[in-house]
Image (cartoon, rainbow, N blue to C red; front, side, top):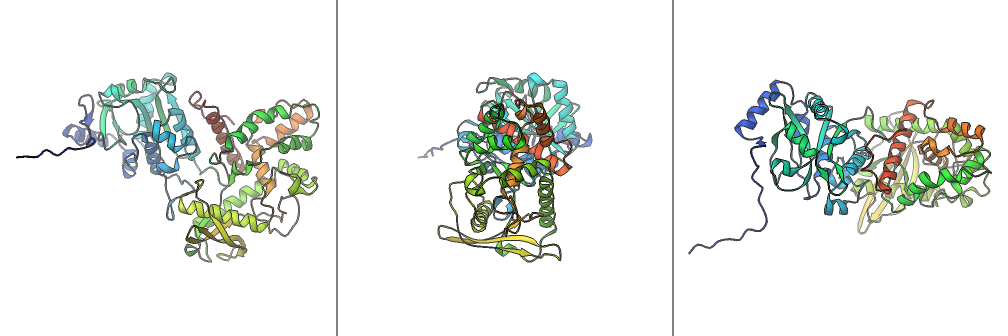
Length: 507
C-alpha cells in the first residue's frame, strides 16, 4: 500500500506563457543572445552579479533597491556584517519601519524616499506623469549602459500571474520584439522572464489601492560623489517626527514675531525651543574600525575620506553663519547649562564614550536598534599616520552583555581649538563634533523659505545671504543640498504625503 505524503506550502509557480517568456527557455535564450548582439544588455551584467531573492514575501521593493544600489557600487557608509559595508534589505529602514514593510509591503513613494536616503540619484515617474515612448527611451538608455538601472512597479495580474503589486528591476531590452527582461526578485515564485514592453506599461498603469496613485518606475543612478560626507539626518530615534515638525512648521512661524530684529535674535528664537533630542536627528559620520583591524597607518581610502570630512568641516567654519552661531553661543552665560539645544555630553570623556558606542553599533550592524552598549574606558590621542599631520583617534572598550570589543574612531579635527560648546578656546583639542558646526549645518539644511516671514527687510536679506548655497564651496554646497533633500523627504514621510509628490526636492 502506497502512502501519500502531505506537503505544506507552495513550491514555485508555473510562469504563464504567453505573455511572458521564461529567460531560461529556448525562446528566452534566443532573445538574450539577440539583445546582446544589439547592445541592449549592458546593464544586465552588473545587475545579475547582485541578483537576490527577497527575504520576505513583502520585501520585493527592498530587495529590488538593495540589488540596484549594490550594482551601482554605492557605498552605504555603514556596516552590514563583520567589516563589510553592503546594502541589505534590513538596512533600508529610514523611511518606513521594517515591521510595517514586512506586513504590508512598501509604497512607490516610500521606495523613492529610501533610494534618496541611501545616496542614489533618483528620477521617479508615475504612468500619469510619463508616456510609453518616454519609458521605452529610459529602458533603452539603461540597457545600453551600466551606469543606471530601472525598477518597475507593476501589477502581476496583467501578465496572468498570481499576486498583486510588485517591484522588480529591468535587466535588459530586446528592440526587435520590444520586450523587457524582468529580473523578478521573488525567485521562489517566478524565474526571470521577458514581457512585451507595452504590456509592462499597462501593468504599471494600474492604481495602487493603498495610495490611490498610479504605479510607475524609478530611474536610479550613482551620484558623482557619495552624499553626506560629514552630516546626515536620521529618523531612527522616535523623536525625529517632533524635530522635523519643529524645523519645518514651527520655525517659520517663530521668526515672524516683531522683536526679531537681528541675526542674534533669530538664533535665539530658533535654538531656545529646539527639541531636546535634536542631536538624535542630525548625526555626524565618522570612520570606524575594530581595534584589531587598525594599525598606525591609514589606508588610502580612510585617509581620503577623512581629508574630505575635514575639508567640509573647515568650509562650515568659514561661513558667515558659523561666525554668528559662535557669537551667539559665546553670549550665553554658562553656555552648556543654558543651551538645552546642545547635547548633555558636556565633557570630553562623555563625548568619546558616545562616539565609541555608536562605532560599535555600526560595526555590529545594529545601529539604531534596541541593543545597548556600555563604554568601559576611552582615550583620545593624536595619531601621526603615514608621516602626515596628526589625526585624532578616539579609542574605547565597549561592552554588550558578555561580549567586549575594542573600537577606534577616526575623528575629523577642527582647524581651531573649541570648548565643549564650540564657542571659544579650550583644551578640547578641536574634537569634532562641536555644537557650533552641528547647529550651523542644521540651519543651512532648512529650506530658504523658512525665513520668508521675517518682517525686517534688511534682516530678511541678510538671512537669505547667510543660508544661500550659491556662494558656498562645492563640497559644502553638495553637503547642504543633500541635507535639504533629506529633510524634505523626512517631512513628507512624517505627513504621510511622500506618495503625492515624487519630484526630487528643490533646494
